[in-house]
Image (cartoon, rainbow, N blue to C red; front, side, top):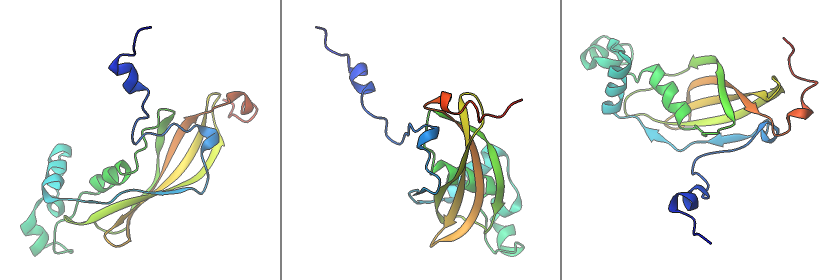
Length: 172
């Protein structure tokens, strides 16, 4: 009998930082917390250059110190959003992003701040023939627990047993 190739052996190992839950396993009320990460000046400026955001509050130290209302440079809100959600990325092959609601920047995040994210499963409902819709909130906190960003993420997710939801799906 031929031995498995290294690739076949490797594919049998569970992928780290990946989830494989389906609609039925989504637990309303469940909370998960990410690791923390500090945002450095270099990565903030690289992000600004990649997205062409050179607003004086994020890209001009002199302006931020002398004329800015915070007295120091901000991290771009789109970067806080991207990093905050990236900290909770679950890489589930059964889910597909449907969009974001209620995105709010609550407190400014500055270069050198440390952020972490709490994801809360809010609700689920049958939606399509093969997929339901789930809603989660993301709360991105800075430093010692100050809420900096809030948003809600809608995702479609495959059913384990689609036949159980056919009478509940939205009709066109």
